Length: 377
Image 1 (cartoon, rainbow, N blue to C red):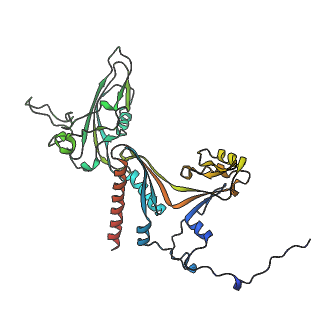
Image 2 (spheres, rainbow, N blue to C red; image 1 turned 180 degrees about the vertical axis):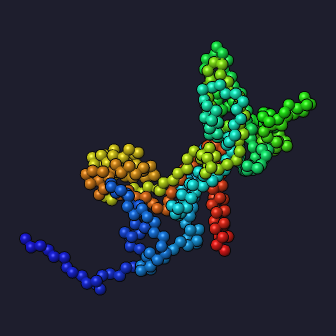
Image 3 (spheres, rainbow, N blue to C red; image 1 turned 45 degrees about the horizontal axis):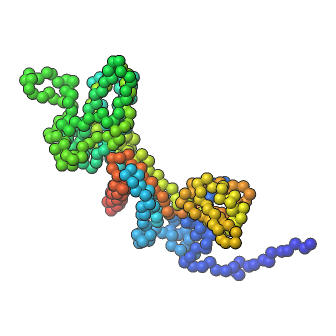
């Protein structure tokens, strides 16, 4: 049997590459991450403006193109979490939003703990650390930052008091976050270096210097300050044990300490794209649907007792790649990720609603861009 030879074609006889438009396979590599059974491929973003110059395609980033294509679509919004799509944006910008949300949005958190008495089994420093991680229900935009040289006052400090005792003969009790009592007039503990006043009616100097009561301010008169959740366990006390302390909260950012981070988590993932390369029918379709652990696929009745597999919930795909493992299943389905479409999730700790956190992150990123432009000019 004679072997068929492939006819040789001169390079001059090859068809011309269409100008102003990328070939489909290159466009797919540019806009999608291809997920194979081994590993994802084409994960890089090509940002060089002349990458496709020979094909007549300008790959530069233009402001007009970004303005026309970028959009935000809110998918889910609750009191504490938010899911939205950021479309037409680069991964670097999406990651910038994530880092700002975690590390650069300010909140109020307990920083200084003055312990008058602690006979519980928890060490003083561990107790102070636990208090610092309790989310506070207060808008940080109402307060100022406090430097080392500033005096604690009603504009930069929030004071809480905790005094709890387990009586002898009773069973063990839990000390919850609802026992933190807000002191709108400031600290009640006298300075350790302060001498007893000569006049018994005069008030001794304390660790704060409040000019007015915080509950007299309009922003707090109908919205008292306190922990976001009342059921957080601070400590457990046995019979005869007691905790008495004062906690001072100040304004800070997550890059200093995680207790100031306004989000429990902020993360994103690229939009999954699940494409059936050929029809999957009959028993093979039922087997195919069962392979997916998150029910991305479904069975469709196409009449005359025939059934075929369809992609019903592509957004739920977690890229576990079970659907393309074994028996050449990768010939039936292709898994991809859209490079400029991100599913973003924000979980707030409670200080600010998630939608406010996002808008504040946009303002911070805008400020960074303005500083760069100012320095360059």
